[in-house]
Image (cartoon, rainbow, N blue to C red):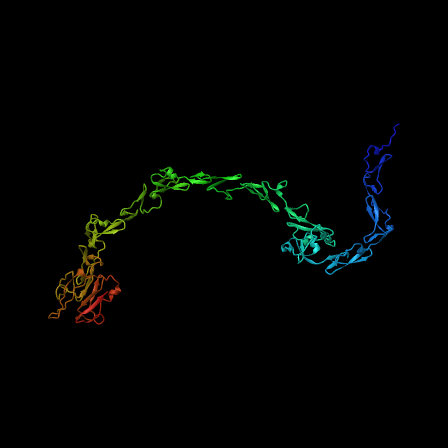
Length: 615
């Protein structure tokens, strides 16, 4: 039969319990000494707070329980002291027990405490157990000999203990020096040490000192202060100052390439040929060509992390510069025989001679076909090598200086019209003959037989003459000029006093008539005006006027015809003058001068003669 035995865990493992191990059936228990109890793990021991657990007897003795490690003790409350018998407490007279308790005041004992009656300029603290210097002034952190430096003050009014117990060096308008830390005067002024006033109040360093946390924010704490720093800064070991963070030594590094620490931050930069991307940390290739950050004279080609320079055709590269190639010097016949080579940056120009132009390649001169474009020829163009020539039509000659056609003056040849007159025209000429003559192609002028034409100029017979013709008149009429037959008193029929039976000269008129005539058919322009011979009044014995005959060749019927007629023997309605054929001008004009007139209405007696005018 199998039986089970209890295992002594305490013997197997002496370290199971912190103090003492007690084996029990089937397990074990840990025990603690007096004044201690087991912790929650049931193995370790912790101090027992007899005051909280109520196992002390201090209250019954009028005392206060104070827990100690592993025990407790009964003490008197503040302001009381143990009774000389050792049992109970009695009031403590702080004014006599602690001389100088109310500095800058007078001490008054109370049951369990005391109070201070403070001198002028001092006030009691809230517990009235101390007289505090309540005067306010500026606090200075720098003092040279006995002079406070105004620039070291934040211009806030504080008490002397607030200043001196918080790192100040001088206080007030008279620059009262603060005691040095560690001295007796300092301990009296700052009994609780730095950060507390004489009366034990916490000093707000952020208000008293100012600018304590440069590059950060000052936060007051009990007896001290701390700084909350801006990004890029961190507090020092005391947490009372902000120092720059060197981000460039951190891991991972904030920059992909070059990191430079700055006050409160850092700057990322890139090696030459790269620029920062938008994130401010990584780098990308810099296109020096498009950003014009290169020193190439002509062409720039971007590369990763740099660039290269190239030259256009016509240049030779020398580092970043391009040197022009003088093509004209290297090839003297570059523009051919009809052009002159002019070097230009990167190329050359061919200056062609007149009449030549550049070929489509712009590198040689070829003949210009002036006729295939704008030219000054008016009647045809003939292209020549280096020029052109104008073709002129018949009757024109090419100008000796310009390529234009000018009229040829054929009349400069005196024999061109033979015996006729030559009249030059634009592009030709005309041979002119006098009126009554025709020009013969063989040269010279031949008479025109006006009487043989279809339009007979005469009504009563025509007689051709050299350069003209004569018209006949019926019996009783006399011819005036070449085309009019007139009848009237005052005309003679041959001799003095001749009658109708006398034969009159066909080329004779009365000397009392004034005429203008077309002489032998010539035009009026360029000839002299002629009139009848002057009338000579030489009365004879029978008072007859001698009439001098005038040639009909001197009569011009285009002008005023004046007839002086003897009307002394006319009756009232005798016929004076009649034109045959009718007057070539307006009938109304001639009617006033002719046909039938009365001696009373149309005649004016002048020494036995009458005057009539036809216009």
